[in-house]
Image (cartoon, rainbow over all chains, first blue to last red):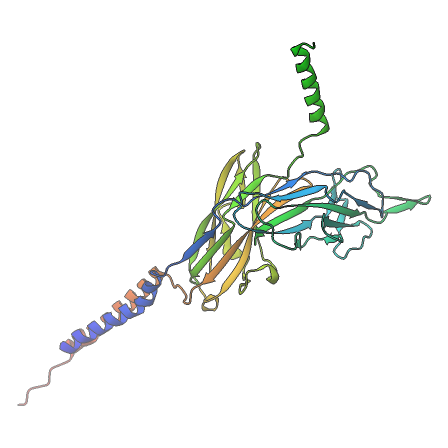
Length: 183
Length: 194
């Protein structure tokens, strides 16, 4: 009878041992640290811009100080900035699209976009992937002016020696995105 | 002497010209996000962590913001941080957040790591992207750094462990009771010597 009781106790101990790892896990602490409880904000002006009427295979540039990016002074850390752009879509016919070039060359319905900071020597191509906008991180209150260069696609057709897009007098719309992340 | 009312007319005309000639530059969506960096430590595989993101709309019109994830290039990640293995481990209480004019809204983010020992002891980084739905030519996007470090052991789940343990215990106890009590009782006693 004694042996029986001992064996039952052993069984209970075994059962408890198998529970222990699971119970021990519940006491582990997960730490969630949130950096920067203040604000994270950048300002970009002007929001809208038009290159006006453009022709096939032509380069158009804005003023090199046309746009201004400012890190809001209320931000509490430095910021890394990136630039991207999208395909351009015809406002009146969304099936007519100019694809943003990935290699710096224009083509039929392929356009190229560059940007240049006011203090930069050369234009840098904008693609759909994140491209560093400012080589150094920007501090709260810093601002950076920049301009854009557009190379329109090659003509859809040529008639009488003149190049044409197949959507004459239409508006093409694209977006240039400035992204920011804590440095 | 020019009457005072005439001065006021001149001033009004001057202001009108100034306003027409120098319109206020429209600004790309003015909004902010906080926090800008989230660090989760000791999150065991099988466990999950939750936190809130706050989006503040600083404009006089309502805006809708979309939330997505983005895996940054190695050069953009913090030192020692690897690529987050699977975007689907991160979920938002809502993928689109509507924020009224001059107000803020919160959205809950959940990070859930599958219960697999191979995800133990890792340091990952992924970015959460907040972008406005209505976009003009120039658009502002924010990325929030999410740094996740996993703990050393797999979290099996308390209930599962306890239930399995209790079941094993009961089974063993039942076997023992059966063997030492019922089976012994059933055994015939040795016949007495005649």
